[in-house]
Image (tube, rainbow, N blue to C red; front, side, top):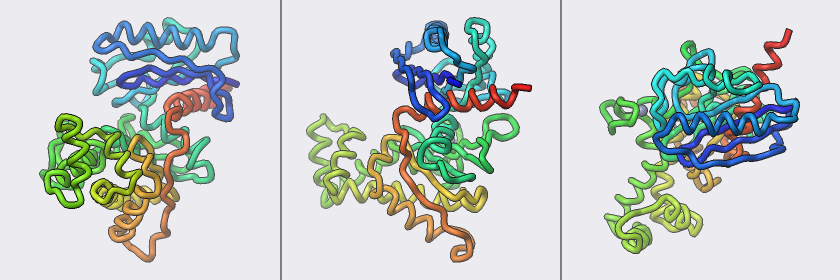
Length: 318
Ligand SMILES: [Zn+2]
C-alpha cells in the first residue's frame, strides 16, 4: 500500500510516492512560487495527481510549516505563505482522487524518524530540527502528540529566558532564539568580533563582504576550528538545557536532532548531553535518554507526511 507525501518548503516543493517501509518509489520537485498561494495549490494538486495516477496510493499527506488544526484540515497560520485559516485540505480534496491530510512539517519529519530512522526502537521520542528556527515533534506512546487544538509540540517556542530576545512568534526568550542556526551565526559573529579564537571566523566573514554564512561556520566546525566549535558549544549548551526541561515533562527514551546544524554530528551532541545532565531535574534518579542525529535528512518531510496519511487512512477503514 503506497501513500503520497508532499513537503512544502520555503524554496522547493518535494513530492514522493512512498511504500510501507518508507522507501521512495517516485520523486518530484518544483520551486515554491513565492507569494502566490493559487500557483502553490496548483503545483500540489498536479503532484498528487501525477504521483497517484496508475498506482494503489491510498492517501496523501501534505507537510507545511505552520499551525495546523486538530482535524489536519486547516492551516491556521503559515510563516512562509500568506495562509490564515486556509482550508487547504478541502481545496485539495476537491481536485484529487485520494483523501488528504495536512501535517506540520516538523511533525512529519519527527514521524519519519520514529518510523524508519533514528527512533525506530522507541515508543517515546522528541525531535528537534535545528534549521533557521527550531522545529519540534513529540512521539508519545507511539503516536504523534498534537495537542487539543493541533498546535502542540511547538518546542522551539518554549521560553528559556524571561524577557529575552524577541522571537518571530511574537513572544520573547524562546529557545528558537538561542538554539537555532541563526543563533549559531550570532555566537560566531560575536566570537569573530572578539578576535582570538574567533580569528578564522573573522577571516571568512571579511572574505564574504562582512557576512558569516551558516555553511562557512559548518566548514570551520568540520576543520575543528576552536572559534566555530566554541559557537557550537554555546548552541549545544542551550539545547541541552531545553532538552532537560522537555525530559521533565515528556520523559522520552530518545532525543533526535535534525536540520542543517545536525550535520556537526557528535560535535553537537556532546555539549547537548553535557548541559542536559547538568540541568536534568531529579538528576541521578531520572533514567538517561539517548541523543542521536536524524538519519533521514532530506527525505524526512515527504516520507513522514506519506506515512501519517497512510496510518490515518488505514485506521479509518471499517
Ligand atoms: Zn517563539
